[in-house]
Image (cartoon, rainbow, N blue to C red; front, side):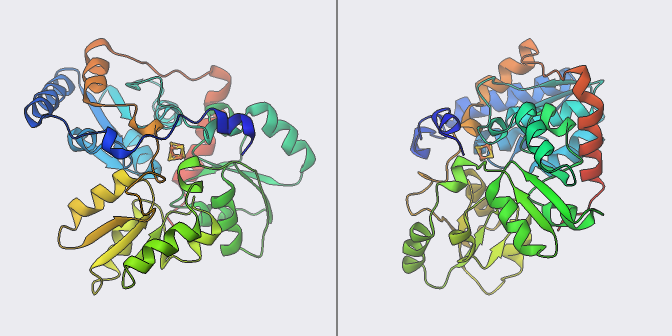
Length: 333
Ligand code: SF4
């Protein structure tokens, strides 16, 4: 990641800065959201890294791939996307006739911003024979210039599915390196972007936590660095983590190397097990500030005032949609 990109990352805020809030107030906001969603025929989607109180009020929660499918199948005329900007863009690209709202304009992503359309064009000029596989964590303009998108749930399958043996993978270098190790028969050239949340974690951090939980199963997201993935029993997307837990019925404790809000979600799904954030400081490293820009108040305001409406540049629409639809046609890894 470039120094410029790093400087755009909001200062880390510990998860304790996001208290659950007064239960009566939370209930009141959630009831208001449900009523507004029904009145305005709105579908509420929330990513797995959103605040737990926001996830609790969503019609669907999931990872990028799962939410893209929900957006495409939506019957509602409005989609309120509780996630970050590139995700809401994808929902709009797949549903150009619907109103897609992002409750906070501060919900960006420095990984998505680490590659521009211009830098992709000049990169492609250096590798004219390579097919471009773009992680869905990218802008619409970059998707429009790509051959196919992927998510962390199907990146390996997408690369395997291509006729070309020469691949440019952008923008996440850790996911790209993971894919390259799974598909050694292909020449995968990787862009130098990274998710600051996952890239923050080091093998040494995880190793220390493993010392406290020697019997624990380690499940890591492929946006983590290689030294972390080498210590993992399972490497998968956030949605894949539910099945990963089920694959270890004998285990009682799991160390989870992804954003802390998802650890909370796993704990709710499997209350009889113990889930620990793999950074050893309860989410101080595995914390995405962008994903915490949307609270219940922002969702209420978004529904009340129809803000902030996401638009796609007309010149990006068809190319970005084609890249996303090819991705959706590729099964999960
Ligand atoms: Fe971007 Fe990483 Fe946050 Fe996802 S977790 S929104 S990739 S910074």
